[in-house]
Amino acid sequence: MDNDDIRFMRMALEEAKKAMEMDEVPIGAVVVSNGRIIARAHNYTEHLTDITAHAEMQAITSASSTLGGKYLTDCTIYVTVEPCVMCAGALGWAQIGRVVYGADDDKRGYRKFAPNALHVKTKVESGVLKEECAELMSSFFKQKR
Amino acid sequence: MDNDDIRFMRMALEEAKKAMEMDEVPIGAVVVSNGRIIARAHNYTEHLTDITAHAEMQAITSASSTLGGKYLTDCTIYVTVEPCVMCAGALGWAQIGRVVYGADDDKRGYRKFAPNALHVKTKVESGVLKEECAELMSSFFKQKR
Image (cartoon, rainbow over all chains, first blue to last red; front, side, top):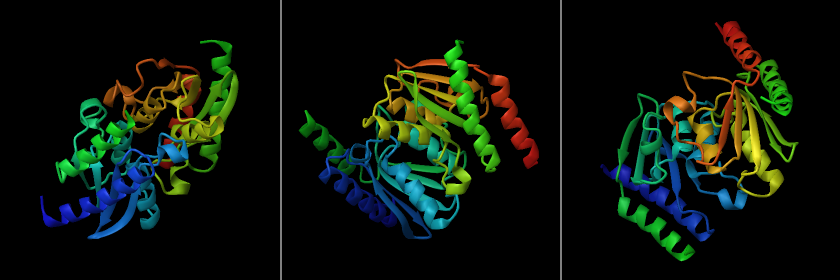
């Protein structure tokens, strides 16, 4: 876990907090290319009435638009929670270079349901700022009960 | 395979043909609720420069918008080719009532990579007009070589 990873995960956490303030599930993501953030997004499913509007999906769409190409092979996505099957499938199509996530999602995470969804060349790192990432989720769902 | 299934799959095939004419991978989808089509879409990844723009993803977004709700529990999606991991994950989140697809996709289809991606209550039927659906795909990729 290097300093850049922590720094970019903090930016993803900022996105997650924006989601929290909007009463959306607090998951945030940033996409980094050559040391620069090229996309930021957070979960937006409630406001858009659209289950496809996960942080990662919107970050992929935004990053592809910025780069002008469909593939994100030289990019890293930082996301506060382990991607779900849908998002892992999308990251697989995008052939993203690296996935760094914070908290595990043992219920809906891709590792359980689709462990081979990512591209074979994609590197994965987990556990970066995992306590903060997980804490945001648990406090959101606690207030919902 | 009943007459309605064939009729709606023909509509999905019409969408796939539109994609073909635009030089997009020829996969089409329609979403049906109470016997009426509430969304039509086809693959749009090239023109949008966005790998998330699969037919099913856009059909889900469109159907949710039409219904004003995130869940498609009373809907059927007709799609010409077996959904990929991303799309199956999305259909899982949408808790769609039924998935009817035409041709199998042994390389990228969800059954191989994420067999439990759909909601446990979702009914699945495959093979409807499979020859036409598969033929469209093979003629597209033949012309690409």
